Image (cartoon, rainbow, N blue to C red; front, side, top):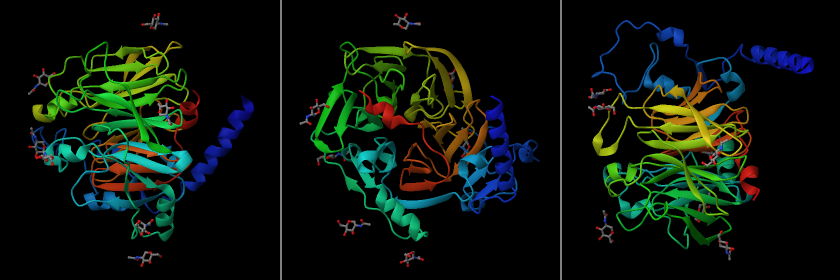
Length: 406
Ligand SMILES: *[C@@H]1O[C@H](CO)[C@@H](O)[C@H](O)[C@H]1NC(C)=O
Ligand SMILES: *[C@@H]1O[C@H](CO)[C@@H](O)[C@H](O)[C@H]1NC(C)=O
Ligand SMILES: *[C@@H]1O[C@H](CO)[C@@H](O)[C@H](O)[C@H]1NC(C)=O
Ligand SMILES: *[C@@H]1O[C@H](CO)[C@@H](O)[C@H](O)[C@H]1NC(C)=O
Ligand SMILES: *[C@@H]1O[C@H](CO)[C@@H](O)[C@H](O)[C@H]1NC(C)=O
Ligand SMILES: *[C@@H]1O[C@H](CO)[C@@H](O)[C@H](O)[C@H]1NC(C)=O
Ligand SMILES: *[C@@H]1O[C@H](CO)[C@@H](O)[C@H](O)[C@H]1NC(C)=O
């Protein structure tokens, strides 16, 4: 204990020394600087769809130095010279949406297109598309240092088409997807893709005791029992590509070996992203109920990250409000090795410490629905029409070794 405290003290003072200079692509934004505003806009001027531009900044200045330090502990996460590099972009189609999964064995990153409304530029004919990039390409572009070269994006031709994939994670050396389904006849399902043999894609679960789910959204592996936990909500319905929900909006667990599916949590508006703390003691679930497709926005609905205790049996209990999302809706969510919580949101990625304090942000100025840690100090970020690469200190919780053990 004494040694630990000593080491901690030394580390802390080293970090404080480093704090003398703010990294070139970072800026400090102190909450005390906007605790009092000259005028505070009304709810019709500033609401759940607005972007917050703190006093003394502009949208451009926020983007120019995109690593925003809200609390000094964020210095340890960004390190001395964090960078953000554009890897790829499209003119309109939101091909970089969600289901971002790093597959270490092939050093590739998989992602899926937005299955949302046609107005988003997608169209259902295009939405069942899984694509990938190679991280070696990403590294080469970072070395060029100017974002001038873009990585090749290749389409994954899976033997069985994944219909409207929205979430994904590593599972036993392969990738499991939550797919939203389409219309009446293609039910939401879990699919398993083998990155070494895309042809061998299989549906591993598609019903709850004979009932269709609403629209499966996101999936995570509990590192303690290795079961698949996934969220289900009425997204396909409010985006007009699935029928009326016939199940409540819930979180479920699926045991791949026994086939057992069980509900573990309810009481959501729009249950969205899910992840576990590195030790598996907590589950985090986002509720993006504030934004509900053709129901529109209801700013008094949740835009909230909830935390649950996970017991030895894998049950959820003790739901706590972990954080109410500052800007628009919380979506994809992942932890780093220290248990800090990263959440994709309306203008980038928010980073909270394990007690729910917003310590920093990666500011993009546009929505990031999801992202993936891709090894120590690296992250790939989906932002609809743009794909970004982050180099900093953060390292993701080890989803791969957990997911590999069968
Ligand atoms: C919310 O704020 C935006 C501007 O940020 C405005 O365009 C919109 O009309 C507002 N919505 C409501 C319901 O007041
Ligand atoms: C989808 O593709 C089919 C066949 O090419 C076409 O008939 C249909 O109009 C397309 N639907 C949309 C929404 O683009
Ligand atoms: C970016 O870097 C590459 C490799 O060094 C170089 O070929 C290219 O001209 C640079 N582009 C710009 C816009 O500076
Ligand atoms: C991208 O793919 C094209 C066609 O296969 C190839 O010519 C090119 O070298 C690739 N670029 C990179 C950066 O890998
Ligand atoms: C195809 O995938 C299924 C499910 O993961 C697996 O049981 C089977 O062995 C695989 N077959 C081949 C040829 O890889
Ligand atoms: C917003 O949501 C609350 C809680 O679900 C509900 O009571 C209220 O009627 C909703 N308001 C609108 C305008 O939809
Ligand atoms: C966990 O849930 C299962 C099934 O719902 C139940 O049998 C078990 O008692 C629960 N365990 C605890 C510790 O609550």
